[in-house]
Image: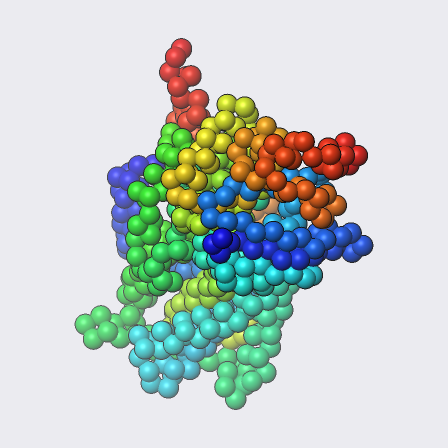
Length: 248
Length: 326
Ligand SMILES: Nc1ncnc2c1ncn2[C@@H]1O[C@H](COP(=O)(O)OP(=O)(O)OP(=O)(O)O)[C@@H](O)[C@H]1O
Ligand SMILES: [Mg+2]
């Protein structure tokens, strides 16, 4: 098998007495859409934050495309082609949708100096508009992100993760609070993006239908450890998973 | 406001600034010049605080550094045009250093750190009298002479300052409209998200301090030849608070806020002079009322009035289709 796009080895993280992540290891290969599920508080977001340099893990290693990125700053990791979203809505409310999207790409172009003396949009308006159209947000291009509906902000937030043309994207509950129509749209967009660009995804999500139909493989986390791994059908039938959800 | 309207109003403002001192006495011209000088200092703080969201209570300290560097060099025979860039550079570097605490502390704690820095600069200026003249300060700085255009006369110095202000404003316009400007705003609104999108928030924080401080330095480089006498007392913490007031009253994070804010803080006391002993009371009351009722500053008031009397009937863009149906 080819080299994994993301390789996570023995990640551990405790908060005081709470073992949030308890030695988690897994690989993700090119083009995969991996689902990460588990009851509330099972350590999914903490795992993301440890992988992405947002929180220092107590132990373990992370490599992206074969390169060890443990301890790397979030901004450097992003420049290596790793996009993400946060569980909490994280747009820039007083900037227009277009500015939000351009910001998400500008640090990947030119140098510090060209970003001061070059064009104000870093030459990215056309590309940003394409992405905005891809997420069906064109009519909101010049609206301040903060005045959009929650679901629309969620879409802008997700779109930002794609602006730099990442090879790997980690999405923390992209469907949280999004209505059913938009949910179908979001799933369709993610699938289309994956098919078009071969981008690898890791998706945390509580909406089972969404995860089961979007993902090619699923990992189940419970109390900081992986308790099951397999295809959506295998996970649906797994007794340990059912117990974790019902007992948790 | 569309682009043509904006261009016209800016040209109108510049024309007003050109016409304002004509036929006025030296004192009024002096007050107008200090308005421009403080507008430059406030513009810098507006970048650090208004755009990048980093509180600083040390802008007067940077005016001091700018003023003292310029004074020492021009007194040593340098031309202002050579002394000024060095003053800017000194402030840029010191501002960069002051930015480091901002990487660790935020909000009130950062305010106290910068406040302490301002006090430190004040004490150094007062105690190192072999260099700074101590509490007597420095006197007799020459005003720049550009051959055909000498700034010895008060009116000429005003126009010189106006020219520098316009250039400084253009440079600031370029900065806030550039990708850097976008990164500054992103730092203010959500630093963690910005970092996850590749923005080097450490570097951007330091730059926000360094550039804002350089503007303070430019203001200081103009104060020296304007007043031709500087002493530590003119750059104390109270003056930093005054510059902060200009930014907040004018409208923090708005490009023209500092001009308006500096006008209110500097010119209003002059206008209120007729009220004699009561002017400070009226003035303070006005400021309190403003800060309580329009925290977005005077530019924000304008926006509200405009919306009230000339509403744009803006439909939320996502509801446009529905609104068109009825
Ligand atoms: N910054 C923190 N400080 C202290 N404890 C934390 C912190 N972040 C997370 N925890 C704890 O770590 C555990 C895992 O939290 P985490 O947010 O990773 O769960 P999650 O699987 O993402 O849950 P959810 O599905 O509700 O988002 C929880 O017990 C939580 O209380
Ligand atoms: Mg979570």
